[in-house]
Length: 473
Image 1 (cartoon, rainbow, N blue to C red):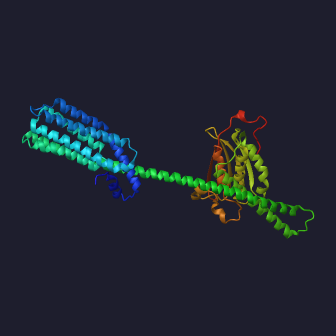
Image 2 (image 1 turned 30 degrees about the vertical axis):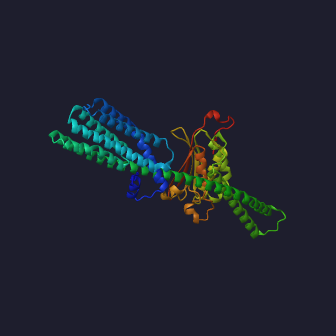
Image 3 (image 1 turned 45 degrees about the horizontal axis):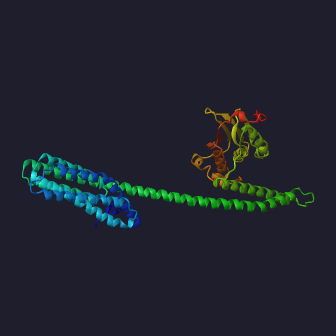
């Protein structure tokens, strides 16, 4: 069967199965490429015909035969050119088999024509300078053909054999030493070209199949990403909607609970007051969880609004210190602030404060009773500012540090009595990176942990003159 079957053969060797339409597309692409590559060779064939007409002597009485032979060659080459033109300008892949057959027949007839002409020249004239030149011309045509037809092995082999074998046989029939030498060289040359055809054929189809698989995988990844993005958007919308729906009844619960606790006309006893306090604490914890989930869903969908400004991070830490002092007192944790930088940063002040509250709260919650928390700012050698929070808690195992910023990952605290949602650090990391900074963590078990934020220093002229760095934290 005359068709480009190399694709199917290489797929079988690699235990791959492509759909019929894909295999047809590969064959269509191959025959298009083949015709593009062989166009210069067609004009080279016209050069050979011109050489035959101008430089080969015409035997007396054979003028009509030589003319007919020249016209036949001109017709075959022109038919070959027309075939390539039709293939290159056709977009109907359904005609693929018809193109393959016509292309195969036109190439085979041209190769047989030139080889028989070479055999006739050798038989009639022997080894003259013009026959030598035509022999060299055929060798060059063979090289060009194998480089153009290498991905259609059947066609390349047919072309080379039809060109070289009749020529080799003709040299042997001269029964001369030089004829035998040329014949042997022609056969060796033919064998070498056939080996190269096999090598090039394998390289072409292996690369083409690999490229198709790679493109297919890329398309699958793009499709998977689109599906994932759609799922994330749906999830974010659901979380946002549920968060708003939960906040309404929860605020009502907290409001009535707080009224019960502060009402002058309340007849609650001590036990009932403790239960009300427990309701309020649980409600506030749940409200914090809802807010965290809402923040997380916004960042997942890329809808985190930022209002950057230049400010001194020491100011923010002083505000946090006043807010967290009572929590630290309950835990018997000492807070110590150090200022080692006079530089400001450029970020969203509210979001930066949210991150620092989370880091400082964690340092207090996960610390040992009677422990110590140190926080402050340091100038870095690269001109940036480092804001750090360091505690003397039990620390984090080295094999768990990679998971510390994963959402809903609480590590060893999941089974403890310490309250938390497990997404505070995830939100903090995303916020800091969104604001152009970096967050790092280092820890040693039994000694404590250190969280640091690296931010680019702000231009001093951008900071309000009314704001001054806090020297006493």
